[in-house]
Length: 251
Length: 236
Image (cartoon, rainbow over all chains, first blue to last red; front, side, top):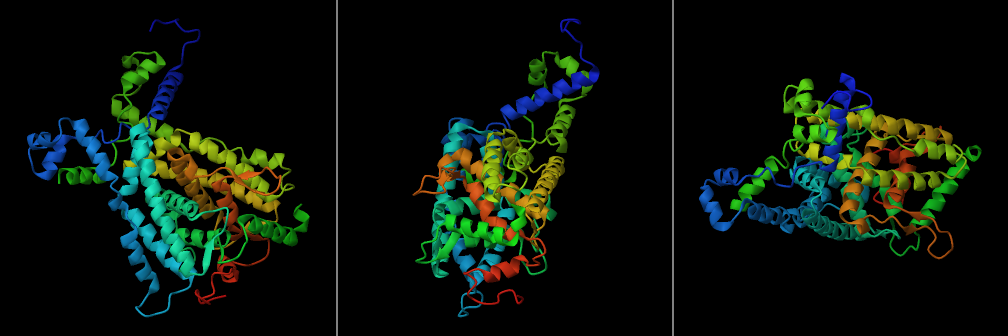
């Protein structure tokens, strides 16, 4: 680096800044190391209590092992909501034989249980770490994972809606509802884990956390009584006329 | 069993340490200086990464929003609020989805590093404060105020969470997050909505109330059709 090779020499502060900006550019180009790069066969063997040689009996290379491990991580049965859908139903139904509580009460209890589970579960970190790496082979598996999980949740919402005497409001579908609720849950879980106070679990002493409150707030726009022919756009029109009625001076 | 062992290791540590893959030799090469020059500023590679982490999650460094400009363009409350929501969410969602810093944020979050976590929290806080003030400005222009028990901060936390979750899903499978829901399928109104815009609008009556109305969320919930089970909250 000969002096004078640049039109203007950097001050020390500029030099430091340029080096940090270069780091930012590199980090944005590749936000994370390749997926599972940090999983070493020697650690796996030690964890399983076998020799590394035993591992190489099954896999020729570390990469072969990582490839199978990816499949193992995305095994659909790991993300099967069926089991806990049953638990959720039991939890919200309360005592055996008691009548089903109203839909908003089911949401309050069910969403709180789900959110707690999401916070305790390492899967979300694994999924988002793999997503962050942006590896094309992994992305298609991730997409398949989200599709499968979305379908199972869509079925769950369809059942819950029908039991409550409502159906999804077009142009929305149960699949879109599942995508939306999954997105809110994931985003809030990320936020809550670094800053618990930002995602209250009890907004005002009635036992409603932020996630259940969001779901109950979304419901009128996303559902309609079975047999109604209202769409979301009718809902939108209603909202506009409510708004015009209360604040005529706002236009 | 060997795959289960691997899974347990991944559950314990989902990703390598934050910025472990950013090497000072690559940084120096990119700037066109020697590594020695870099070590003039930082004693070790770890010191450099620590400062880089600070820089990446500096609350001052998040991308600016264009929504206030849009608000001005739309006449500061003169255009229907749903038009502001439709256009604002569209442009913000595209920016979020295309921003590589979201991947960086999630990779760093996934590492669950005690040094990085407070920095992530600090950036979220700054972003939420900015959105809270944008929402407050817009609500005021439309004769609205926040509906308790929501606050502008919890509203911002919710919408940001929703946007990030949808951006992840959209990047993996664009069709799962539609951006072309036609507002007037049978007519000739060409307006199209994205899923984030629809969700924002769906939430708006719950987030807001006309100034001075005094109605909280629970009173709203009681009014809507699905709470036919009666008085679930013990208060009207």
